[in-house]
Image (tube, rainbow, N blue to C red):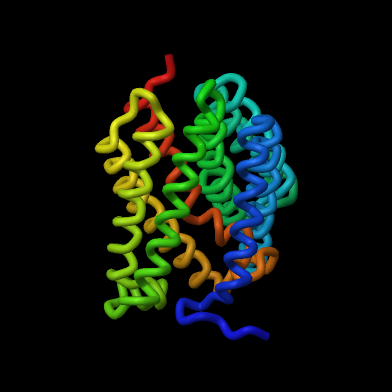
Length: 274
């Protein structure tokens, strides 16, 4: 088995998997937008299953079927009808989670409902903002700016952490994340955001992209640390093993999910849809 790098990854394998995922994203995003939406539904649905399975190992039984159905409805309605319809779909899914779990009996009911609502908001609802970004005519460019900037945070943080990492941010939560890595993430995100806003959007400005990058490095870092806290509480290293060199799909979505609503909000403010 190839040795893992200093930051805990088998780097060649991780790069290969990342490039393959990137190719699928770009092909579906720019050729057939509904195909990209279906790809998002599959990826997020698997990530949701990984999280539900991990919670179940600690006797927290989040109802998977209403969650998966709710995810599909949230994504579809966000894309076709906007944020109000997406919010209604989330609320109805929350009711379905409660009804589904109540029908199974009272033992552990409150904890299971709480776990189900956590998964609903943390995964399904936040993923809906990616569908909101995709919906406008320039949706492919909006999603590109979002995904590329979050990826820049991961790549910049990894490179700076490996090369210069000395001071750990939170050793009890994520022992490989350093302050130097955070600086690398911030620099990469600011540069990436500035370049993308100046090139992708006719009415965009580089300084808006820089602000966009700073905001997303904050949300991506919070998302990464947040999932690390969940995994530490559950006593696991990764949510899954589907992606060699990365872990599970949920381990790749941890930075994307909390960044999606912030990206959507800033894009709506800086590059309004006409």
